[in-house]
Each structure stands twice: as structure tokens, then as C-alpha cells.
Image 1 (spheres, rainbow, N blue to C red):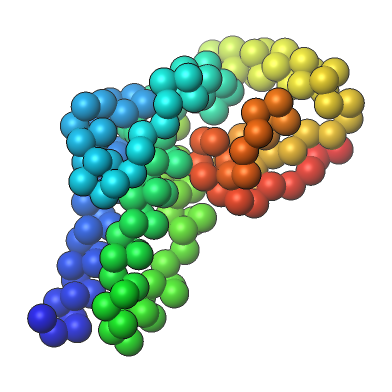
Image 2 (image 1 turned 90 degrees about the horizontal axis):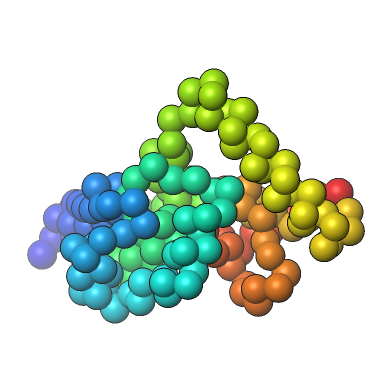
Length: 169
Ligand SMILES: [Zn+2]
């Protein structure tokens, strides 16, 4: 196959994953899980999904961003080994954080004015609970803004999978 076709295939595959995640039911569904399975990606545990669904990182639809990221990683891995210069250049230009964030923007609920107040109230409550636990520092994901919970040991953001955290005073 010539390199341009490979590149086309690579982009189509990324786009298919994006669309599939987006059209999935909120938090993922059977068809999305089967799709993950074809890439050898394990879906989030039910425990983690329930935790995220009840967190302040509200979603209106679609699979969780971290699962889409895992699929992107598999797709990139698959094309990386082909050692094609055109592909390598496309892969190095692929901005994972931006792509995952773009996806998050699409699955976020539309917040009317009422929702803003509602979310602000629950957010503040959770935030102050967090503050009591962690004194005056909260670690948040630099990419999506999800708080990192110290009691849950993990290296990447549970919501979007980013490794980038920042400390907010
Ligand atoms: Zn995140």
C-alpha cells in the first residue's frame, strides 16, 4: 500500500474512534465496549465509571475520554511500527491532549443558566470537602480540570487519561 493511502487509513481510523465514542451512550455502551475490545483496550471498571458519573466532571453523552485516549494510543502504536516517514510525521503532529480535550468539549452537557447555578453549588460543596481533606492544595488535571483524588492511587487523570497535573493553591 502506498504511503498516502496509509496516511488516509490512519486518519480515518482516528476519526472512526472519535465518532464511535461520541455516539456511544453516556459512559459507554455494549457496542463501544466491543469496539474497545477489538483494540485490546479494557474499559474502565464499573466502580470507576460510577465514581466519574457522580463526580463534577459531567458528561451528557459519549464514552469517557480516557477510553478514547487508550484507543488513540493503540492506533498510533499500530501505525508507528510501519516506519513510514509520512506516517511518522503525522503521528508526531498528533496532539493527544488537544484531541482528547476537543472530545471532552463535545460530550459536556449544555449548561443553561439554571445548570450553572446547580453545578456551582455542588461543585463548591465538593471543593470545600476536598479542601478540608487536602488542606489548601488541590491537584487538578491540566488538560480537563478534573480534580485528582489522593485517596485513589493513580498516575493519570481518571477522566481524560492525561499525565499532566497542576497544583492549585
Ligand atoms: Zn484530565
